[in-house]
Length: 441
Image (cartoon, rainbow, N blue to C red; front, side, top):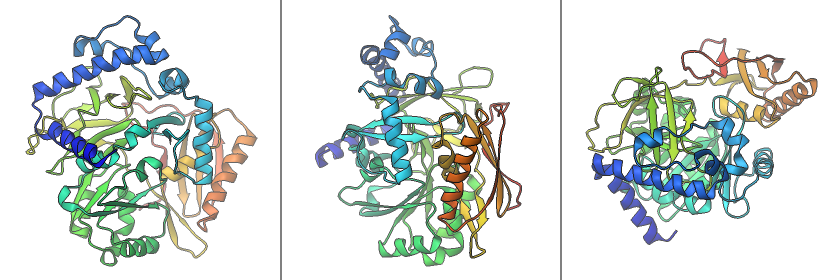
């Protein structure tokens, strides 16, 4: 994307967030939904069959369309996507990149293929076309939690894996460097100093690991968190320790659901995703303070893999009107878990944090037969794993071998016990708690 087009997109996104009246926003969303439904009926065999001759003239019409979820999306992957991609080929590519730890490059020179485990169910494949990833610098400046006054910015981006989509953030005046969340704290400090990092992007659990060494890090203009819930108490703690602003991005494989405004509050990206919220009884939730027990999202911009009325497992609570003046709904907080970070003794008898998303990937990439799992840390050198899959010694050995090999690369030896058992979904709309610990932390 040219610099001129990026500037135009940046101003458009800012105009939408801060200048668009609520009535104009509703009109914009309805027009986008109408356009998507008609286009996907033509381009996607799945939606063509699912929607048939239905027409969308109002939000009420749209609310009557069928709901899909990850299970349906994966089952119908080939018929949902509009770019002729095959699930088996995409999965092989994604898993190979996972095992080779080679995350850059486009699939067929056109698409970023993402592999997601989420909080329940099995692996999910998500397609992002190059035409979208090239818009990321403008999107990042407008909705990434930074400001133009921060330019030039030098970002340290920390997550379990990298991808071409993240690499495309690099642009004039924006330099992004990546480190895995398994990087040793000493190496993080060295890298941050050498590259004169002024923006830190990392999950809250990783930032917690840096707290004892704050004085050794360069001063960050801003800290941006994602991938885990940022509790208000923890946000306050980070602000005090790092003496900087801390904001949260609500990003999922299905889309960038919410971004921070200039006041630092989280807002649904109403022009990028259409979000429907419902109470436990099924009534629509638009009022602040009510737990939305069900969330449906419709991605308004990704036409390669259209997700319309797609059910998410996340639970949110809307907040009061924001002082920034945006018509975009404000999220007061996301109801989710801060997955316990496992800590194991390494060969030097030091406790090493092992992040849940890492263990999750080690498990889910072994077999498609794995429906769910629960990992429980017993002590600093052992944990138990319950696998919801057909009983198989071969699968058990493969999982055990993969986990032990990955942990050994960090100097960690563990006693791992695996059992097979059906794992029921939790009641009361709570998320499946995959990671548990018997250790007081």
